[in-house]
Length: 330
Image 1 (cartoon, rainbow, N blue to C red):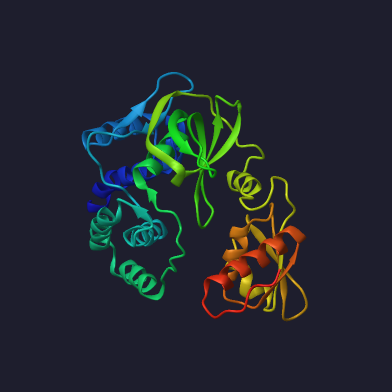
Image 2 (spheres, helix red, strand yellow):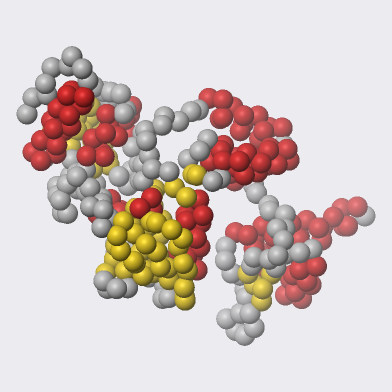
């Protein structure tokens, strides 16, 4: 008898989980997933609304159900992997990777860890105790700006903002945001610039003042379909547009390097038993050289010549900055 009484509650939890999984479901899809009839789905949707979940419905053949945003936050269901990922992300945010969210991240983390099962709490604690981050001076991002841009990307909303380019020139931009990309150092917005009728990438830390969302625009796809690859192709901040890839030889096995380099950014090819060559998937940039140097492994710059020259210039600048160091060689 108790098992039968629990079935409707278990079905409601499963229904909430499905609605949180993707943006929209048809009634038939939900009924098929839960192995019930359409009438039961309609009845369960009504129960969720009574509990405070803002479930919206669209009529017609193409209609369906989607979980909207409401006036109060209903319970959120996470599986084990999702709960651990959120907890680890909150720990990182609490450490100050985004400005303005440190205190709220600590409060949210405390609430989450309070309800985590012991086995997951121990896993999160172990991850927190065993890991740390090296501060390399990455630009601090305003969390509100990032949140508004993410919403504009999700909902196909146009956005206006003030932007300061690398040479210091300020401009007003009217865009259709498409994606946000984190390079490991900088945050980039990939958007279609309506005034220039072309795609552009914007460093989020160079956006000044508030981002003003506007009317809904068309759904666009980044050229090539991969926002990260597109940013990488445009991110030759120290190299010219269309510059060749950079190549660096590391005097350690490829296995020691490959796991520390995102596959969409560069690839490590074995070269014998004790070395490997790392090649960028896009144009060379000085930021790539700095990133590789931070790996702390013996390395050798192979090319192209412009990349090697930039490396020598950087070594000279660093040597000149340290009293008593020999001058850098050109």
